[in-house]
Length: 317
Image (tube, rainbow, N blue to C red; front, side, top):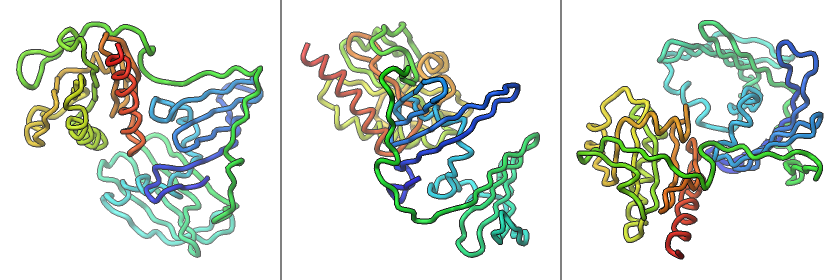
């Protein structure tokens, strides 16, 4: 594992794991590799490899292996909830694989889960982490740590033999397929739908007031208003999965892009269960691509790349 910037957003990791599935007698030997924004999951036994862009849903290839990725080592965001915890209490010392550790017990604000951290006395690194929920406890033990080890580019290379099956993991409708007609209540009054947007490249940004990363993507959307002001691009915030007052929120923030409400059905077509998310539609009403999650400037560049690709087709035609 190698962190490439201080934010923890850009990193490379190679993880070789044995996955045992309940009810199966044959564990799978897996190799997972993330190269900043490219993700691979390799199953040598079955001669299968999957690949995906981090921004287009490729991150889901790592979901099953997330507990072993040890985000507490390198990603400041992974302990953001600890910083906002109701209480963090020193709970004595313990030993983890022979390493003396200070123990911290964390109670979170949502009162649905606690955690227990065992931090090495000498180096402060996490040696054991437990997430204690109402019904289950997830435990991660870390040992044989080599700090500041030398890593090479070759450590993160993925070689896929030509006779293996290679599939692409992505989210959203098939690229190039026609968008089904939709129409939603507009913040400006009346409704706004696909038929009103023909001849323009359309960006649908799905968000909700309770989703902090969504607010960042809305701020980015506002910035793109100026970038594409004189181009045939329509930026639309689509509110979905809402429990608050999105209209009041938008008015308070003073955004200038278009916004529509009650977007749950459209969101289910594009990226069910994922927020933030966005999709780009070309001037002819076809899907260009979909992005999910927010991974800093990389996500923004991915969106701009899809917009410019659609614009190039529209303006050359």
